[in-house]
Length: 444
Image (tube, rainbow, N blue to C red; front, side, top):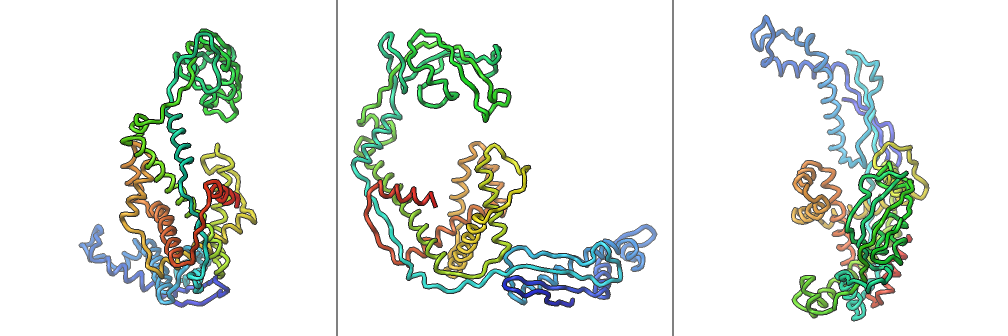
């Protein structure tokens, strides 16, 4: 096999592999000779079929196998001897593929981009600021009040008293479109909290002011994005009877409330809330530190990027954002989505930081343990209730899915490794200041 370099420009490499016709024929003969002892054919004893007949019968098929093996072996040897680390799967093209005929040399062009060498950087010189927040009594009280509200009950209003937003009304209703009742539009004794937004826009507002015993025709228009296609944009009338009007009553903040949420008493519930708030603040603070770190690394280290990786990442970003803007489109049967300059800039940042973190993690011998992977799979499986076993099997059989779970764990471990060696100062702030910092993070 003859190998000729055809391209050496930055990270781009190109090679032409030439397999002489004589070498290909020799490989065909070798494979046929290897298979000959096990071949049976009518009129011949097993293993005694003449080579000429084997070539005539199986030559074309063996020729293809021999060609593929020779090319794969040559490319594999080239990669191994040169310690080549391609950024993506090499592109392989056969010259005159459609016009090639037996007796011709096989010429294959191979092109790829190399992963870049990552320059050394003094990560210990990176300076970061960690915001710290201590859970205040007012935050604990606010959380308790929200729990009490969620645990609220409803009491009958005085006879003849009108319903207000936040009240619960018990109703019968029958929906009509063009004078005809439609499936799913009827219910009896339905408890509806006014202002909850659980019904079609405009429905709940028209029951504010109603009294027990009232009959109300509620006029609404189904949204254009409504789940039932036959009702999208349709005007409807709901013949509604109000049977009861009840006002909300928040639960008392006492030991009984605590027990309803699994705590022994109110003090134990307060401690749990304080711990939960502290964990939330720490998580938010870590997100800010991580963004700071990535920004610093993006400024600190510069190297050539494989354009193929950048293009693939930009396409993925553009595709993801398009689907976020068009949530009604679930498949891929849509127009071509061209990445913008903004997408490409973000892709360059992601690729640069991804390669850098991978290099740091490799040098620090950071790995993702089996236990960490199992925990990640179990967390994801909770999103598929009743289908956990099928999800586990899917992950086990799909290397790409495993990598999707492994990658963020690895990244976080590398980030924590860098932070542990960086210069980190702490600054105490209020909950409001932390939230403001997070809001500015979302805007970037």
